[in-house]
Image: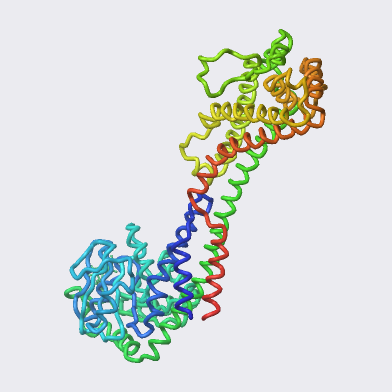
Amino acid sequence: MLLAALEGLGEQVRNLSLPLQVADLDAASGLRREIADQLDDYLLPRLRRPDAPMLAVVGGPTGAGKSTLVNSLVGQPVSAAGVLRPTTRSAVLAYHPLSAAWFESRRILPGLGRTTGASTDPANLQLVVTSNLPAGIAILDAPDIDSVVIANRELATQLLAAADMWMFVTTAARYADAVPWEFLRDAVTRGTAVAIVLDRVAPDAVDEVRAHLATMLTEQRLGGAPLFVVPETTPVDSMLPPGTVDVIHQWLLGLASDPAVRATVVHHTLNGALRALTARVVLLAAASDGQSEAAARLRREVDQAYDDALARVDDASADGSLLRGEVLARWQEFVGTGEMMRALESKVGRLRDRVTAAGSRKSQPGDELAEALESGVEALVRAAADKAAERVGAAWRDDPAGSALLGDGDLQGSSPDLGEATRQAVREWQDGVLELVRRQGQGKRATARYLAFGVNGLGLLVMIHVFTQPGGSATGEAAGTGGAVALSNKILGAALGDQAVRSLAASARADLHRRVAYLLDGERRRFLALLDAVAISEDAGSALRSAVQDVEDTR
Ligand SMILES: Nc1nc2c(ncn2[C@@H]2O[C@H](COP(=O)(O)OP(=O)(O)OP(=O)(O)O)[C@@H](O)[C@H]2O)c(=O)[nH]1
Ligand SMILES: [Mg+2]
């Protein structure tokens, strides 16, 4: 059923979020508001009550005499007319007492407050009950569409969208002004029924002006609109002299009293509104797609940067480049000064006791090397994370959507606690390697040599092995550690067996990869959280399209 389909569409339009700063965001937000207004102010109330009184909205340029005309048609001064431009600031709605329930409820123009006194607040709708109007029709005096007061124009636009019929009032002096014609063209596009009132025409110019305006109307596809000419007179008590607007009055009475005629007018406007709605929703759906595309683009930048960062850490921790500087010096110390031999000989050697306080324990052979490895990996991860953050930052700043998401936020480098988290992760990894070596030792390959070398010494050798894969000794040589690497590999092989060494190194490498991936994921999530916070629904665009298809199908 059409009403249900439109209600479903309205729900989606209202819930649509357009949070990303893309190029056409303002236009899209405006579109969403217009669609929602059109649904709430016209389509939904009209479809819920097809028999509700017809609403004629009187609109046009400031000073054209709209309020004076409304007063004259109602037969009593319901809306103040004035010499100051613009005069009318809040809409005045005159209707028959029998229509009270319809207009006093929020079923139509739900966004406007109701007042029975005079008001200059555009957020208010002034209600005037009068038995001078027939029950089938209500007249709304709107603010102007062309004065310097922007709020007037916005309200007039909203009111016109709520109209079953627009009575466009212009004068002999103003009928060729540009702004009103834009509104008229819009009404044609939207399919609103329009009647034209040419006001204040000097009696001797009536024929000439009427003919000219009629030509213009025909050119703008408004040739079929009723055209009324009101001769210039002098208003008394904000109303034109009796009899001046009789023709218009009769025409309105005719519309009001004949349900079939009224239904034709309403139907015309309703169909036009539905057609215009469909076109607008399709545009809005495209704007919504633009949001998901922007989000996907930003997400891709983040994923690429951090995937690359992980790959870089993987490469650098396997190709021997870690065995430089501090690590290399500690390594040479460990091997060269006999520390390794001591470690290898120490049966109860413990690499480092993570549990007892650092100061309370004796330093163990290899401690410094283990710590240098810790720093080395920390520097590696931090550099990669810094670079990824920089890369994402630059790409996002280049993109208005990303730039707005970043705001003044400080995501310029890696997070401040990444260093400590990495050291912690490396320490846990080292513990894990020792545990692997220990378990390996408990297997059937446990040899006297294994027992002689000790878990800690072998553990360190495994770590060095991990950091020199796949380049192996060749890379080691490049780093000046070829002999030492070859020696340690020989010892490892002798103690654990080549096969076991390979599988130990593979497990250790996989474990390190997993831990680094976890750390970098934390870094990546800082950016993704910004995206997640704006909650973009990927399929909002297609949902809108299918909702509008439902509307089409039920028409
Ligand atoms: N002489 C003469 N004055 C008129 C006529 N119609 C309106 N006026 C005067 O023109 C001025 C503007 O009339 P309004 O009815 O307030 O015009 P409006 O279109 O409602 O103007 P806004 O509310 O500003 O948009 C008032 O001073 C009216 O008295 C007319 O037919 N003849
Ligand atoms: Mg007015």
